[in-house]
Length: 58
Image 1: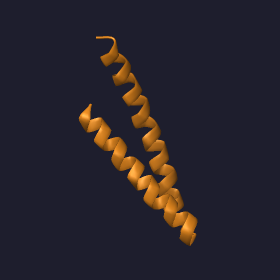
Image 2 (image 1 turned 120 degrees about the vertical axis):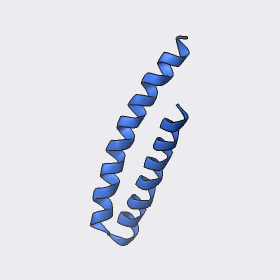
Image 3 (image 1 turned 60 degrees about the vertical axis):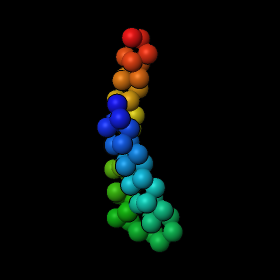
């Protein structure tokens, strides 16, 4: 679970960095990277939800 939380934190950090570059400097490549990071974060969050539910049922 700890490893998953680290991956989620890294993905959110990447999203924040790239989305700020796009918003502040108009960097289109950073926009592509931020969208990719958002999809990765979504997958990780779904995995977290599954793990969380299974841990709470024990």
